[in-house]
Length: 428
Image (cartoon, rainbow, N blue to C red; front, side, top):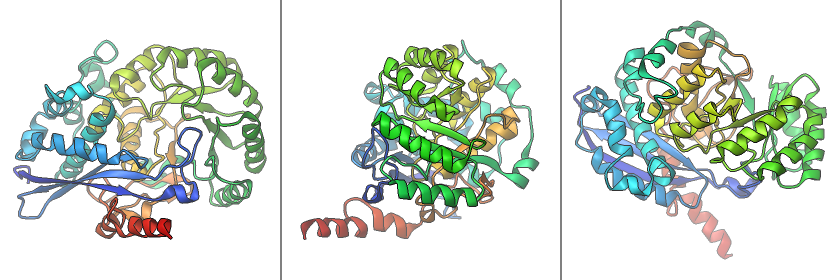
């Protein structure tokens, strides 16, 4: 089936009205509607082989990503899977560095989100066909611009371990963000935290950054609920200036957060380095990465000791290809990878990346965990499985991002049934 030719690419704007109940709300994104640009690659295979991919957005703007996917589609349609994986590094560079379209990037913003959606679909297609070996995976990485931090030979040296048995038995540790979105009431926080504790959760993340006194009150409430021995993290979603971040987090230090996530502008490497240095005596690390647009940004963060937790995202950078590079750089710099997964489909995708990190690279769970949000998994054919607050490795072939066709049709924007109903309610 490697000879299968990609004959057609379709892309849909699929949105879920999560803002109605404040799911996903934080200090910067107060009304997110979890959304995806959803890509399907069709082939001429007799087995009707298809590949499914997506990139995550929060509502308005998804239509722009859809346009970018369509613009890139001519670089994909007509190629065989064998052609692509035979020089996957070259194919990645073809998508990310087209001589004209790279001007609206390069390797950042909407064009990179579109690249991720297409590449995620290609990886899903490939994963449905065959297994992978380490050398083949390394050959998918574009090492351009990062050889001063990680060479191809060094990367091969990192991929030597095999710890699959433990993952199959116990799963990968997760933390929950679903209990403490910024728009939730105290009653919701209390109820959700109590339920999560009863389900075995021990690691909790709290959204902060809008109002200091409100943050102190909410962090105090949650710390009392979860107790002194469970883990607490805080997330400002890029809300503060550098000095403001240091002052604000210092005042939250009494709640003993493991990290402050995205304290300032996601592009400010030196600002994050200053925050990291200032908070180190308090035992608080800096976590960031979900808005880092490519491997070069991660290289700089790691070289500058600007973060203590690397937060890869399955859709922000150039799909698996680029995330492999980031995971391997993190291993070289001995910084734990704790993926971002706060969005529709992100848990389904990123579980594959974090399992690769543990099984084939780090073989460590020290200060490592993967985000989990308990929203919208019912719309996927192979939804994430959580058992005792751990990700259980998926067993279905592919990249786990195939959506149920009924869900896609109902939530397409603006013509889907769900959005037509919301429009009608607004007119009444």
